[in-house]
Length: 346
Image (cartoon, rainbow, N blue to C red; front, side, top):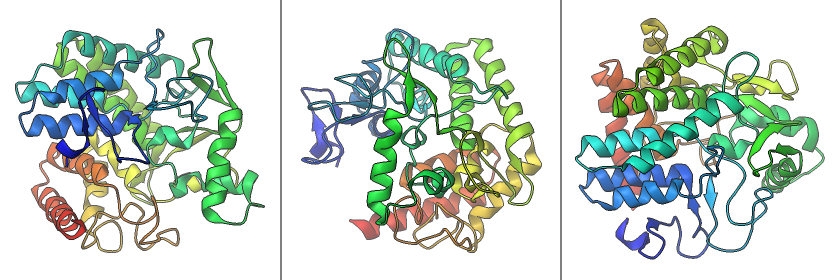
């Protein structure tokens, strides 16, 4: 599969031959992990190209266009939005497999994380996203509070989401370099994005030996525990910063996003409670799982984009969380479900 989608001229894989020839940030980070797992040096090219259009302020675009501008902000060659910072884990994974990510790539990762931890912090000390695209899970029911408030007159579901997504591009504020920095109607501090940022900082500390990154990771993880823990769901929820509409807010819909802080929390009890739900058929376990939305919740729709089965990269991140806490039972379940799904989908 990787060979079939490798673009030697551009130095990375593309998702689809005709429809999706652009390079997406976290797609390439996961692809770099796959190359490294196979012992293939193309891992370093995959990751380096994903970071190659970093802006001078450290911001990393979530798309590098393979063609003309496609309305992802004011920049002509890349988007003005970002995606979850998987790049530090990808670099650490590569290094652990004997593939050098390169000093330049590691330096870019440091600047990217510094941008998120300075330019994107909420007043409460959490990292914000300013568009659903930035979460990587753009059609998550956690964003329904925003869409319902402003876009309910649009009738067809897919059309509603398309118009909502594109409408937010014009409602976002950009800095002088073209990076999205604040949202005028949509701004959220997601549990998953913050968990992955803290995890990235911890991975960078491990990769570089810089203890300052470890301290930043621990500080962000502690803030998540303080502000985002949802006792009723036994998960971490998002925090609406601008907009969101409705009470209770859609940010409390139970999804796998709310389990990912188990990657970084220091609270063993909370981590165990969240991970236990990956074995529960009413929550996130499923024959071809994991489920992305808790299966008992009204928002669960088995065959729907980001509302049914989880994308495989979320399974991988859940596996990392399970292994961190020594939960072999959970890890083995995730592996079995993932292999079953991959085999069935061939």
